[in-house]
Image 1 (tube, rainbow, N blue to C red):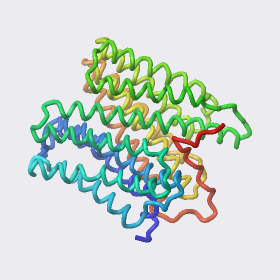
Image 2: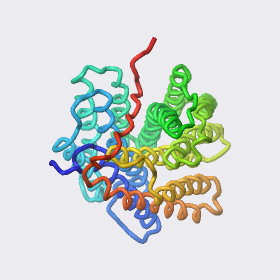
Image 3: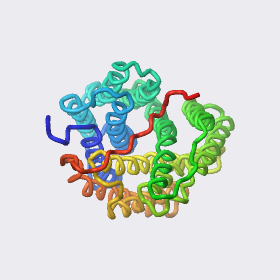
Image 4: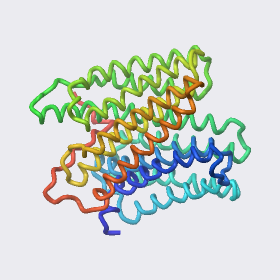
Length: 401
């Protein structure tokens, strides 16, 4: 396990997650078109919902957290055999779901549900070892994601009639809280550092109070949505959270990053947070279909933030200059087009099918480009003369004076 591929979590999880993303969406299109038939428990839609969230996004989250948490805590990196075991558990879950209809439901659940608790244990060990309790909220959010996955399996086992939708909503909105919490630190910090290095210093000092209020608002809106609160209350909360997220985004001066792809994609990813929350508010108030909001948050906010952070972190942690390879600019634009097309498909029944296929093609091409560009980078040793990777900001910094 001394190969560079197993030296840090972002290497296997970013690469395998991108490959899975590129292949799974075309497969889903073939499934719903009736061209391919697989023994899927709950059908093609259940598989698509589950695997996009608990397969692809969970892999990217694992890659980020298994690299960042040891960095935050100063603990020993999660590498070698422990990392390989986590990857094996993730792969086993994907294999079990693809033939889930041919296996006992309890066996599929046991295999698939093992990954996220194991990730919590690995991350928790890094935090407990150095007694850095302020980072425990990250473990709590991963635990909630694990509970959401269990809710989906509860429906597959005929234990909860609405487990699939409740679990999927809970999982997606938990991911958006993570995006709000961690992205809300990463985007302004990386923007400030890059502009300063380019000789364009900017006063970007995010308000800790506004950040805390914004994160609480996203979590509160998510809780009301999952708990099926009265639509007026949940809708108002979602719109309020969208407003706060917009204020935060405006303060980060994203327009100054338009010539730096590694930065503008971070701002674009964050833009989908208020956009998705606003669409959710409108959906709860009966103005639009919920699917538009769900895909704005999943394809727009979550997937775009995954690509934005992974493409940057993969360069920094392997000693490469923090300059987006040219094909990645095309990948960013393709993924953005995928998000726009998927949201519009949910809003317009007449052109929905064509837009859905366009979205799927752009999504697959974007992640295929990521895989092809980063495979040689993530499977080779770190460049010896390369720059030190920029530190990922701790989402729960020590309180200052």
